[in-house]
Length: 349
Ligand code: MRU
Image 1 (tube, rainbow, N blue to C red):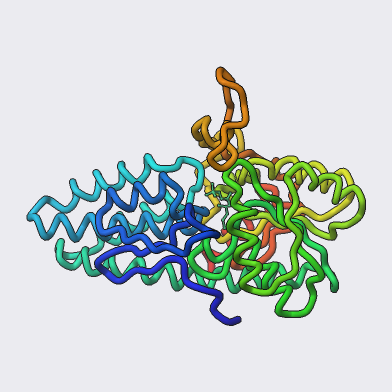
Image 2 (image 1 turned 90 degrees about the vertical axis):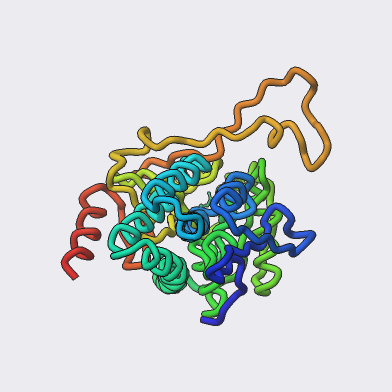
């Protein structure tokens, strides 16, 4: 599989991000040299998508450690503060908390503060490399599930921008295209932030993958008309019982897919599984600001006085998921027993 493009770079001194708020009109890079700058980039969605948020958080920890050693501050206290700052940015994607835990463990295992700085910097490179391997495996497992001439529907952005590597659900699409198995992708625009229209469309154009951009409300009707062979989405958190939190609108796709007998696949690395959260009801769903809904572009569309509810994610019950495509294999009918079996087998390897 060839490299698509890089959207996240780490040079040991700063995290350099392709600013996703400016795409597709401008390809503009932002340099985050402090933990506060990294936290700001995550909150403002300059970097977004569960795995990419995790990578950014790890870089934030590395930068905090560097600054602590430079200024003579006690490392543990500095890292706890950095952790708290980063953990406040976005609550739903578990990859953020997973990466913070890995950074904490890495720092704890170091014999000195100076060595912790070195190891944390290396951890960012390791996570980037691991993500590349994960995405590659997900692409292979997922493409094998699709029929020849597949017409796929996807939601939000789960590509290179969302992982810093090849992408999860969009990585499957890309792999199927490389194998000549893909006829067409329907891309939901993904209101209110329009990750589908702005980001997925941009990635697919660059890759030469044929697609049609559709409004979110068209998806169920395309499924009903027999135009979709599979729905493939990413995930922000998968609870122990297999319930899946993902971009708002995902649940409606799963319901429509089940009703019309179309497979509904979730593609996610193991870092998106959260065995500590028993079910979807326990997942904290981020509520974002009203402006995202009240405005389309710069234009205010709703009348003054309109009150908004803007949940950024929803939860799809495990029973509506045909299979979860992970980096270590496919979990069919992802109930708790099947997920436990996969994680158990992995632990034994
Ligand atoms: O709010 P976002 O854009 O960060 O939400 C992204 C999604 O919901 C993705 O589907 C998910 O993070 C998986 S990305 C590989």
